[in-house]
Amino acid sequence: MAPPRDLREWIALLEREGELQRVSAEVDPHLEVTEIVDRVVKAGGRALLFENPKSQHPLLINQFGTERRMCLAFDAESLDDVGRRLGEVLEMQPPQGLAEKVRGLKKLKSIADSQPKGIRGGPAQELVLQGDEVDLRRLPIQTCWPGDAAPFITLPAVITKDPRTGARNVGMYRLQVLDERTTAMHWQIHKDGRADYLMTDGKLEVAVALGLDPVTAYAASAPLPKHVDELMLAGFLRGEAVELVRAKTVDLEVPANAEIVLEGYIAEGELAEEGPFGDHTGYYTPPEPFPVFRVTAMTMRRGAIYPSIVVGKPPQEDAWLGKATERIFLPAIRMSVPELVDYDLPVAGAFHNCCIVSIRKRYPGHAQKVMHAIWGLGLLSLTKSVVVVDEWVDVHDYEEVFFRVGANVDPKRDVLISEGPLDHLDHAPTLQFYGGKLGIDATHKGPAEGAREWPPEIEMSEEIRRLVDERWHEYGLGEPGVADGRGQRPLRQLLRR
Ligand SMILES: Cc1cc2nc3c(=O)[nH]c(=O)nc-3n(C[C@H](O)[C@H](O)[C@H](O)COP(=O)(O)O)c2cc1C
Image (cartoon, rainbow, N blue to C red; front, side):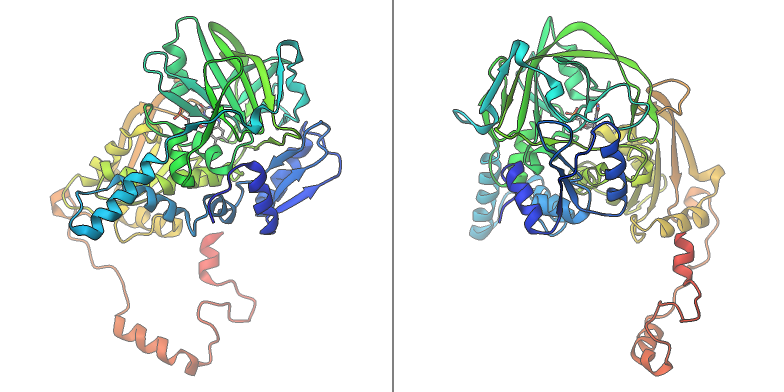
């Protein structure tokens, strides 16, 4: 099997796997869909295909809402497996011996085959609407939260070209509907689409693809360096190049498999108030001027399915898009920070608020070195707080991390307050975009870092553990770790509350 080739294959796969629920009842994209989806997402429920969302087009949502669906999207056992595949290519060494050479050639071929390829026509252009025929209100665009300024397109792949180099960028930037043929373009100040816009002298052509195969849709949200094409990443992860067709009214190529494509342009200096929007921070992003996107054409597949996502107070569906990035980019981060063993961006931390890192600590100040590395790496540089633990601590076990922070940290010695760029949406800092950073060094320390010798950590001996494992059934205590049947909550559960 390979990852689905388009949205319809993806929907069919989800349905076969019992991961999709069709909803035929009429629902309103204005708030009602959000309330339904919010409940389903939080319960770990299925993807929803609303067949009657008060619109001519069905609406797909919660396609990415669980780890299982995310793995199905990539046709992988785990998201770490997806990361490992990318890591193997990044870490390629000169091959030794014939077998390694053959393997190396296969890897090189997989990179060469990842380049998007142009084809002559595709389903994305079965229907072409231009000029006055364009009406965004044909689509079931959601107004997600009561304080939202308008309907927002929330799951787009926004395609632009760097006016100097011609290099393509694909980013997921929401679009607020302003009228039938215009939207605001919410690319934040640290994002590559905005960098293309700032290079523009006059007009920047833009295409927005909606309803893609899940890997390409994910790739639009991937934090790649500016010069790396997200569609190439998509091709690599799919094991098959993304096919592109020429747009009808702009000089751009668009995914041939898209359900819907909006083509148009942004004129330099034309801005509109964007927001408020109930954002993934859990707060409304206040109104702010953003560029205006004028739609010159809308192309579609027949019976086009409109994709959407709700963000809001975490956890929401975007949690798994973020977790995919966390896992897939681990090998790439290790290329720059080789002492990094693992990292975790807690969903409740809205991804940019907190990063827990485990490291192979070798020298005094090593944890601080890694904090600065995180604050210097791509979009991770926006991370507000970094917690560093030793290599033997499981960064995904928040109780374990909390224990290390409590037990190992002398706040006077181990807390680093720094400053730097912060996420565009962060409302906490005094200034927008810039403010404090917090580093917590929860690693073991010794005299070289001004600490006393620490007492040893408590651990049962291996011999006694084995003995009790072997004899457990003789004690008549039932399954280890399970409540004792007297209605008492096990300690671990108590910690978890
Ligand atoms: C569901 C979802 C919605 C997003 N909306 C926005 C947005 O409106 N504006 C923005 O700048 N980034 C948004 N992002 C984050 C960007 O897509 C992400 O930072 C991506 O790496 C940007 O691409 P770029 O690195 O090519 O700029 C969103 C991410 C997700 C998963």
